[in-house]
Length: 240
Image (cartoon, rainbow, N blue to C red; front, top):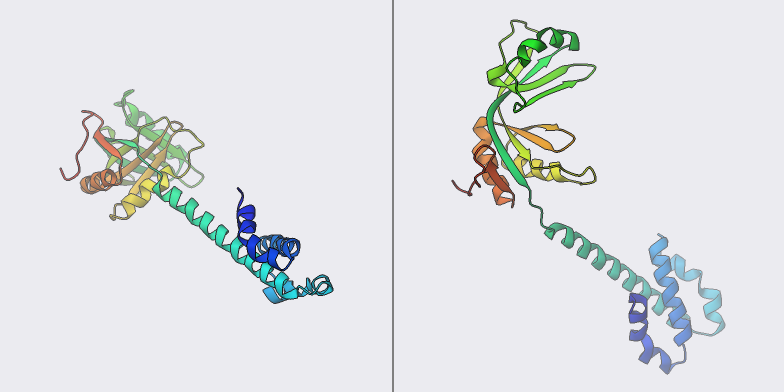
């Protein structure tokens, strides 16, 4: 039974006593419709009923029914919204997260041309198992690479940030998925862990500082995720 029909049944006994069933039901339906589509005040809306209502002397009944229709409509909308929010908040959200302990370094080159001069030397030790990411924008070229592959370059224009380790979201992840990265980032932000994120076609990689790794693992595990060492594939128990 719909909400409208259910509410109508609640009127039946009272309204049939004075013969205004049809009028009250019509007024109630119109009240619901008006509440859903207009921001007019109750008094202003009531004025629009007056001529028709006065014709059969049921102004009071129509107005009461109209007010109740608005109250019911508002109550049902609030209840529905709350139920939707509650459902979303209790929906399970668990991911498999692999810790890759190989320390990474982030290197910023001011131009693609400058990076190109050093690219061969930075790649010579890389293998198919390596993590190596290059991002080129109009204002910079950023490279993420294993610290062991990087040979210091004597150039003040090149900036480096070291001491990162990787948390890989086990994929592949569908492009239609929403909120994965934001929820992980929020969990880590709550424990004051700074992140550096790289996304690929298959998945997301969240880089955290080595000093923050234990804090990050505990927070993510507490949030319901399965966190394990990528090399050993052993689940990490909270508190270890």
